Image 1 (cartoon, rainbow, N blue to C red):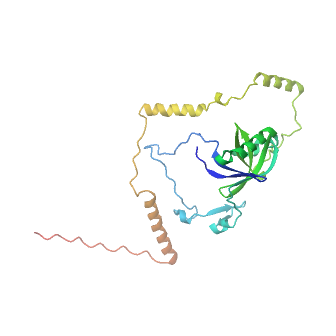
Image 2: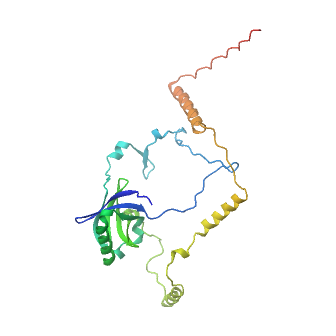
Image 3: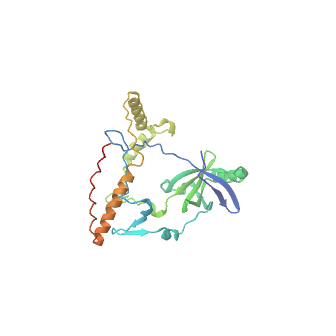
Length: 278
């Protein structure tokens, strides 16, 4: 694994230098959109919905759409004035009982590895969290955005999990369904019997993504059977550049029309010169 961030855990007067690693990775099956006829990849262009023109990256800004559909364009200067932090500190705010943190609040997970010189305070914090059955609520700045997070212990390693903000947790509102409905004693007895019958110990390795496995087997079978396409490489310099030139030419014509200039007449072709007889 490669560290994606370096900083330090701070609690009280204790400072623990650590490295941050992503604890999870996405194995979702990824498809590409291609032309059915020849397998060529589909390109997407940055086209303005107002004038239909192709837009360069230099002319793209961030926009915030209001609830009534208005668009507020934000400049780099506007964004530079917003509160942001690039601190390399995981600042512990408080220690809370582990069962007080609802899993709904938890977001991304990271492993924290101590620097060689910080093993002892790291182990101290790890053992204290585990023995007290607590999590450390902290703040941390990742990619200039300050966020809440918790520190907990998993497999003798301190794990940091970022948290959602309060306004990011939605309230369940199902209308007619309410807390005044309850199962009968007989129904609960049957449910308890079913739970007892299906009780067990969670073993992650017993579960498998059968869709991903089947898809991999399907692809391998097609490759083995020669059912593959070899799309031709597009000529270098073609594609978006040609479209960009066409868009520029169109923009020039529109600008001329807006000024009231008539399009220039194409110059008459001169007759081709005849070769002299030798």
